[in-house]
Image 1 (cartoon, rainbow, N blue to C red):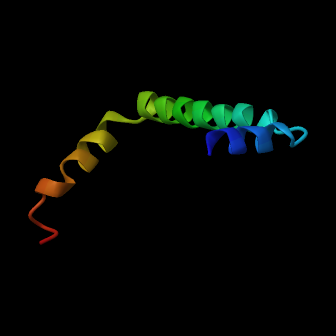
Image 2 (cartoon, rainbow, N blue to C red):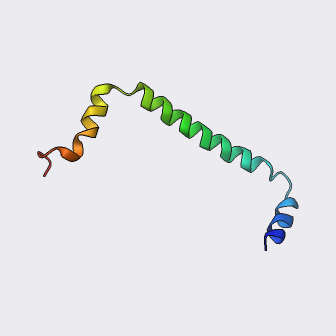
Length: 58
């Protein structure tokens, strides 16, 4: 089964770009997420972390 898929994929021209595109999307997502976490305000993080414990919403 794997040989069939591998041979089929090798016959498609230009398919080698798709793994690179998916790696770049993955990398950029986590870089953006890391940047958001680093630049988030301390008050916002505290407010969001206390939401499950807040009794006013019940």
